Image (cartoon, rainbow, N blue to C red; front, side, top):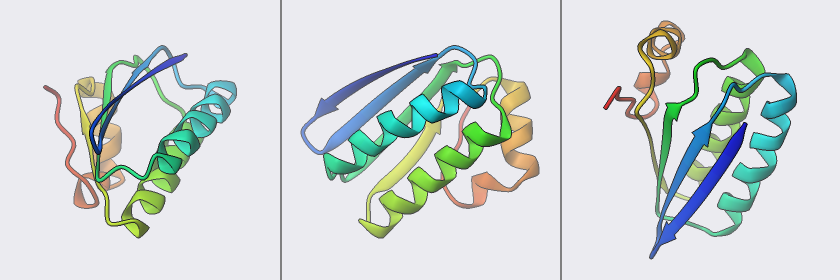
Length: 102
């Protein structure tokens, strides 16, 4: 798994590529912690390169969202594959933040 971070003003875009299994989830957590320290107002996470994600990866994204929410930052997921979208929707994550397949 690889995470590419781009910052433009107060907006941060994260492009995650590769499967997010248990080991990768820990690396993802470390990358997300770096983003929180940037104190962004908006974060867009591009998951178009993620074919699969485990529960630990979803947990890391949720914890990241909670940190951003504390700081009043907007968060959204874009480019999610249909199978992952269905998982995220089944646990009602779309009620917390926008999730789109484009």
